[in-house]
Length: 543
Image (cartoon, rainbow, N blue to C red; front, side, top):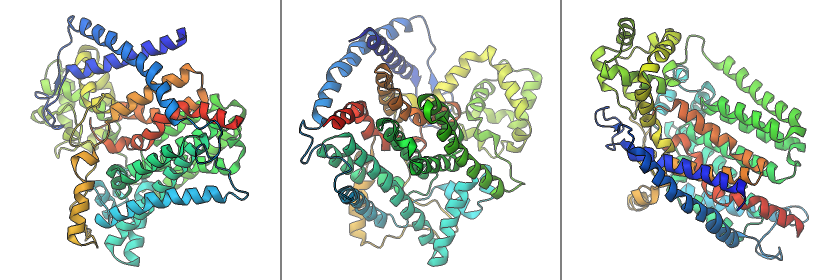
């Protein structure tokens, strides 16, 4: 192992040790809405230093074994054959007119689609959380909390289906469109594995993973903004991987640029943190693909013009965004101080009591900002009118309450970064929120059949998945591996996901909500194979 490799290995080992150590210090009851007296971080002390050092010394050989033994072993199992023909190591361009590619595409697309469609019939017309119902009731008012383009996408499909048949079919249209779109981008990614030269069994196993794991069929028929956001974000990752493996050829293709622009538009339109993801990704790409800076900037500019133009045209003038949605973590940190009632000046106390009655601050739940910001007594309009005053208050309290701020931050985010941190609210509900819109689940399948398959799709074993923190830990290892090998174009593929991670670390309202990072489940099988993609593609080109 080179000196550069050892340096990256030590960095990863240190981050792993710190991660485990911080989780060891967190006391969590399992209920996100429990008070600050039940969920807390144990005080840090000098005795923690030997514990942290021991964790680091243990993680170094474990990480070294993964890098020097496990990865080479896995590489040998997924590598293409030396001949490069036959059933293994197939290329995408076989056949004089590309019929082989299309045939494989429809096989994979159909295999996933048929399984998902059966689940769609089990759960017909799909699932919808409370936010979805609020959008269907009033998409204009809901634009205070959600991007207006997402609201109109949801409301438009619902109204179209209602006019064609009934309300349930309106929700079913959303499910069907999302199923087809997610199936398409996953199939595109699986065929890209084939292009890289991975063996057929790898592609088949990946296909089975997406078809049979209940997590994907559930999100495919869930009318929430996280599903289309993850679809566009995943497609962007696959396109960037295609560009990274294609030796600059991809950016020459105008159709490739159009698809990238559509991904930018989708990421912007379906989540409020989309701007951070797109802007940061474009910034990095300008350095990675210097020759194509004009094309990259033009693609991003086109998507931005369409997004901001449509948002400005559709957004109602009398609806203002809720500041509380982007200030969840500062609000939690201030609440941690207010709940204890110590170190507050007269003016600071008066301001906080104007936001929420003094006795209500004791409700502060360190793992869930919603307990405070959605309390009926919380004055959201006052917070909107005094954004500057709130931020100044937050800064004023910071120096004397740094320890409380750090603890509040850890408790409100540890479900995002903590290795194998789990909670019953980690995944997504499988029903339709109570409503007056005549929306309800009504499967056309016999009750016995529906019950049998519902037990498969909705039991705790089959629906389980790695925690968000575990997948981010794996992605961190692979990002360091690619940087260590100086594969910067391939490392840039992970940039959109890392920007999504950063935005959650800055503004997540709740410690555990897997739907915010559902794209991780889509990326996961590709991430396991990603370190070998460059080597396999190069070897395939030599055949």
